[in-house]
Image 1 (tube, one colour):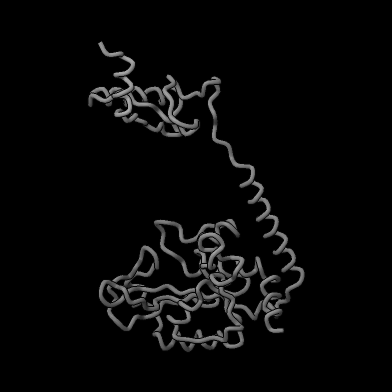
Image 2 (cartoon, one colour):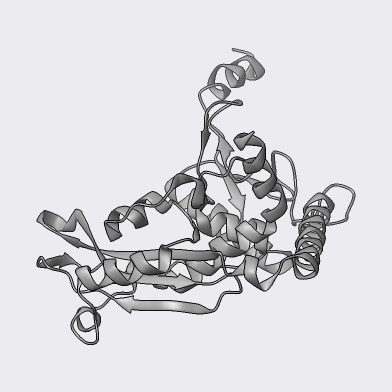
Length: 286
């Protein structure tokens, strides 16, 4: 008669444990019911009883409740490092704001304009981007210009879920591309323009601007991230920078983008690094 233990050893390696993860929001009776249901389902299929893995424990377990062996349930705690980081960011923002208010003059503020554009799609499958809205805000976030722009070609994708542009917007009270270029071009004269990926906005506006008078938050090194382990720097999304550095949410999923909000966010990011940014540019000129 073969040793039962040896037989078990032979077949046990072929049995893959059925591990089921207990949702982190289930505790007590709800967790027990979840396990009971999963065992019933496994037996109906002819499978072995599952092992249960809890997010509060390391590895699978088969305990009769959701508590760890010491009898105390582990709870999710807010990470202290994240709280400290948020506090540091908030302190930095407040310090920079106070410093700006105390030192920057009205004349200096007037040198800066933030810009953001919204596009719609033309051509096959709406792949060709065309300007449909332009927004300019000043140093303090006040609206200087916000206008829809008529599109000369047939729009095949309004991208409303992103752009916020609807068919009626580019028909009613919209300016022509030529008018837009003339108005924005005049407003840009002698100004330092702030934005995120400004080259895309300038391309849509069919305008150029001196490189020395551009402050692009997508190309500012402290706001960029390295690709891989210390590799080439690449731009970050404006929404991510706004949330991390400013503590505000823009471009919320499921909501249309606002070019005004994006322009204001870019300006606030610039103001947060105003002194360091301008100082670094002065060093490059030397």
